[in-house]
Image (cartoon, rainbow, N blue to C red):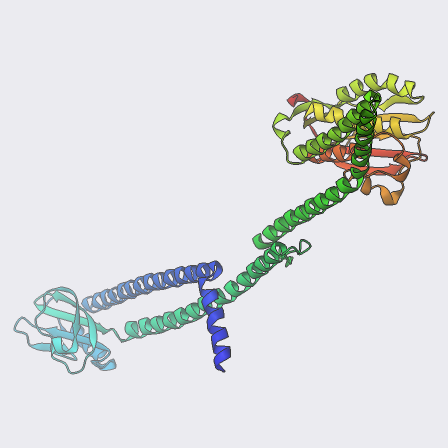
Length: 465
């Protein structure tokens, strides 16, 4: 490996070692290994105690069997039985001894030293034998005799050795798996986090279209990525909207500002000639008022989009709002040689700001009145379907071309055929802002002829009103 590759590997490993996924993986790996070792130690200890109890039980059974052959005054069967057991086993496997009160050996395969009655753990040297064997020994008294029965720990030690080696191998495998798996998972998680950081860096450099790749696993990192992508989508939309607003303001307000300037220039020139300029000043004031109204509408839309009015939300009867709009604008529509009526109604409560909702529907009705020809039939309907209250305003006017329907919600955007009518191009922008504030969905459709604009609000139970 070259020095450049080694430096790159060292830097990568150092970065990985400082990462949160790696530290979490190492932490949980260490906890897992410690838990396994602790559990293995408990298993080993419990097995050792269990084997010890089994050995003691075996000694007790052997001792009882030998004792059962003894009859007071008759030791022949006892001696014969003990010698038979001793003849089948060497001293490395088991020990048997019967001695009298003087310590003389009567039967068995070794001469046992004097030991107190009970169960003892002894070595070969403790009982005068060669080697390094360990024994579990039971000493008891039969009449005037001392009986010793002992079993070697070889089987128990062999079993414990096998278990110990198995646990050591298992621990080694667990440690290797924990380390390898932890590093693998940490590298995967860090790679996904690096993609998040790279995307955010691209966004910081102005690439607002950048998005975080989603693996499709549906895990928490995917959830975070989806949420961040949604926020970036919203950010891109807002930034593009601001750019469009800036361009629209420069384009659409240039004409009224120039008109204001020309009017003021004409007033100055007339004043120099000592002519009456009151009419020109009135025109300048009206033009200034229209410009101010446009900026106030822009500010109002921005405040609504920022959620400034959300704290005023409360259960609102949208049907009652439509009734007020119909009552107020029926005569206005009639004066403009159009008709306005409500075709469908239903009890519907939504959570929102009543004043903003009334302004939103009023804007839709005013748009239909202002931009449709004489004789247009304007209808308002309220339908309750699938947990939503759907408000629709339809007209039989010229409608909006399908390619223009997304654009009409932009600030200051006006259709060419609407530029001869009063307005600033902010009515539908305000409608869109209010709908978004209320988590409502806007859609447009042909009315054959004309246009139908529908807004679907999420319903709340009427009893909460």
